[in-house]
Every structure is written in C-alpha cells, then in structure tokens.
Image (tube, rainbow, N blue to C red; front, side, top):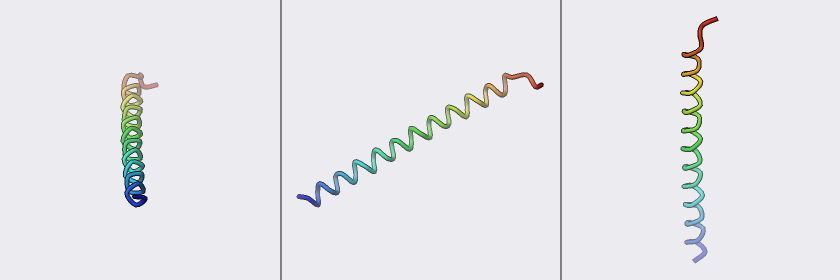
Length: 45
C-alpha cells in the first residue's frame, strides 16, 4: 500500500514538474517572440 502511494506521489510530482517546465518554456518563447517583434518594429537609431 505504502509503495503504491509513494509511486503515485512520485508520478504526480514528475507530471506537475513536467507541466511547469512546459509552461515555463511557452512563457519564455512568448517573451522572446514579443521582444523580437518589438525590436523589429523599433526604428534603428
């Protein structure tokens, strides 16, 4: 029983860690895209 709980908890932790990582990647990608677009729109000084 305890083994099963441990395995379940570990799986849940791993899954949420992976999801958080994906969200972080998406956020970083959005930020990069946004700054790239802003840099493109800004006239060269």
